[in-house]
Structure formats: structure tokens, C-alpha cells
Length: 242
Image (cartoon, rainbow, N blue to C red; front, side, top):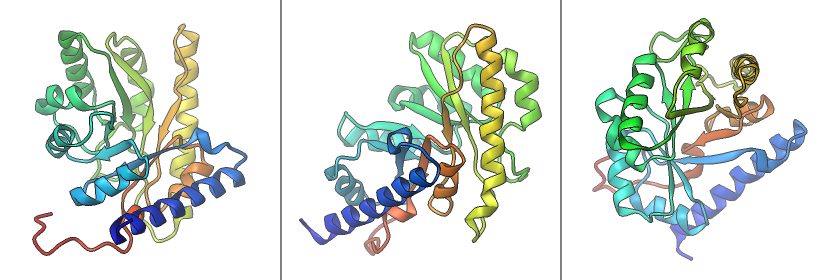
């Protein structure tokens, strides 16, 4: 095992232990929480070291970089888009993405519906909620989701699995708890409405990053998006352009 592989394996073991402990504190089973390893700032060799540990779910923030990496990395990888998606990049993204976490508007949702219908595929997405009222971030407000939910439920080729959010950055992870709990409650409310119409409940909550993922798990997260905590102790090579 190389020093790089050893550091990645150690970081991953620490993260998994923290996930297990957060699940224990909240009376949940660790199998209920999926780790999405975010590769936005990761070197290719770091990603390869992650894959050596058995990781198979990767998250990328930039659609172009996702498609480029999907083309050169093993085909068994399940790619999640966790960053902003522009409407003109939907087609390329659908071709290599298992789940889109960041559908932040009805215009984007409609675009995904149109392209997925034309391609004969079923798109799996999460709707991004902006519950911290941060004007620098995109996403639906809670009221917008409630008002437009009937339209969301009418989608034919887009499968909305759940919701995603990002809490405002803070040194105190506990400050994220109200936002995470609001997302959980909103997902339960919208899910009940869909069940009442003969549909399925919302089963996925994507929330929590390296600074607050334990609080997110305690609040009901099923997907946690971690990057920085997986690469602790690693230094990009001087020739890196990222």
C-alpha cells in the first residue's frame, strides 16, 4: 500500500466511524446512510485510491468535469451531480449520471423531463431547497415547493426521490440542525401528499457536508456529501491546475 492509499484508507475509516456513531446516537442503522465521495477538488490519483477501498459512489460539482472523469474512470462507478446544473448541459449530464441532487427550478425540471422523454430514459433527481434563505444560493423555497408540488408530481420521466439542501457555513455544526430538520419535515409533508395521490413517499434526503454531516445524519439524512474530510493530509502536486 502506498502512502497515498494508506492516508485515503485512514481518512475513510475515520469518516465511516463518525457516520456509525452518529447513527447510533439517533437510533438509526448505518445502512440507511449513503456516503457520496465528492471529487470536485480531488486529484485523479486520489480518486483512484478511493476506488481501491471499494468506494463506488462519487459526487462531482461540475457537469463538464463529471463527464470527463466518467469517461476515463471505471464504468461501475455511480456518479452523482451535486453542483449546479445549467439547462444546456442536461443532455450530457443525464448520459453519465445516476442521480442529480441539485434541481433548483421548475425550468430545469421541465428541461430534464423533455430530454429524458426524448432519450427514452428515466431521470432520478432530488429537488434543491434553499431553506437558509441565502440569496447567494439557488433552490426552491419551502413555499414554492408546496405551491408547485402538483406540477412536480405530474412529471412522467423524471423520478423525484427526495430533497437536498445546504446549510449556511458555520464553525458550529449545531447551527445547521434547524435547516436539516426543516428539510426532513418538508419531505415528509410532500411525501404524504404524493402517497395520497397513489405515489411513493420521498425516501432520500441529501444534506450534510464535511463540517456538519453528523448533525445531518441525526436529523435524518440518507445521503451525505463529503469531500474535504476524505482528503485530509494530502497535498496537490505543484503541477496541478486545480
